[in-house]
Length: 258
Image (cartoon, rainbow, N blue to C red; front, side, top):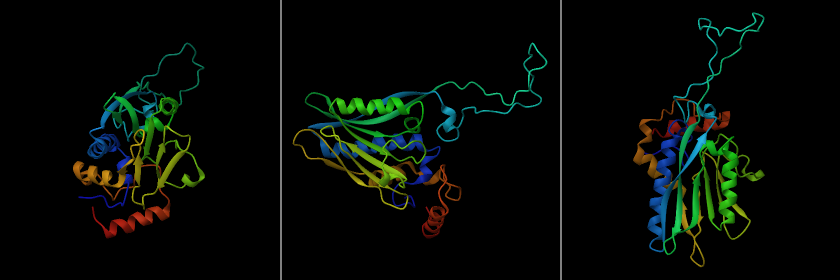
């Protein structure tokens, strides 16, 4: 079963996202290894990030994390020294930081095991405080180390890492920062578009290989049988779409039943 969307399916941005992230990284690795061996090899590296504000994604990435709850009348009140203290408006439970595992596809030169290209699929924690700052620092460190970076952003929520007027109206972006120059090539696309085919640079005189992101999305949708977990009769995950976009989706679903 395939997704009714021509490219990125916005319904995968909800609670399925951690699985989508892992599957997409694995499939990208699989696709690239068929093109870059034997001189290069792609491997999965797992980055560990401590999310100190998991309540930002309660119901999306963290369905079981307790959120801010209003104080119930029947709950016992904490005694205060003075009876003149104003009533508490809300009691906020202490939320422990959540350890997030983020897969990164790394292409290495087999001759010396040197990192050549990193492929980052952005997670919600990368696109908001406090995880945004260390991620931006990581990008700079990769560039300074002479590593190419291909950055895939398939999440509409959060702060856009790549900013440009021509990308402002795009739902999703892919950005390529080559180690050899200071120019960033970016591809923007919407739910109405197919996902782009992008170059993946290597080293020296070796030509780029190509990654068909749309094909990778189709593969993970079929393999993971996401149609069994997605209800297209429900409202898509946040942020909300415009009325014309929702109308386009409604027409799409009427033409093609997933």
